[in-house]
Length: 121
Image (cartoon, rainbow, N blue to C red; front, side, top):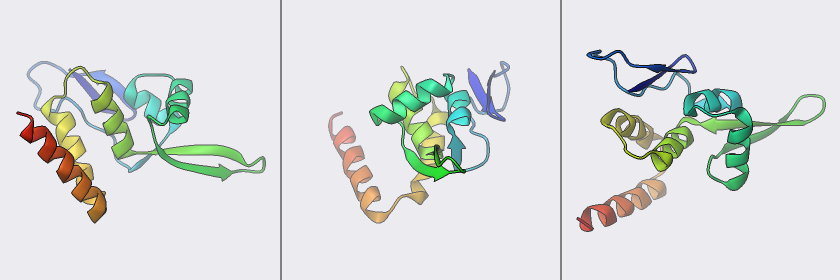
């Protein structure tokens, strides 16, 4: 399994009590940090942003008004879930930890999506 700590992906040691997936602290990540978490290049993250598959804040900063992108923790987790072949319990738990940050309308939409999934079984 893969463990994400300190913005680097690491293999979990067999028999370890550590969860299979763990994000470093913080709610916002730079494109480079998100790339390290996902296991891709920063340019790939930028392309996924442009395609609308990763999202967050776009800030103009610096003397040249360079665009800086900050990707929210929930966006990284959502991307990993969407692009994964299977979702283990630790990745699902990481998603659950983001739920309290959602607005009421987002929670109602999420509940409707969960109800649709459960009704399909």
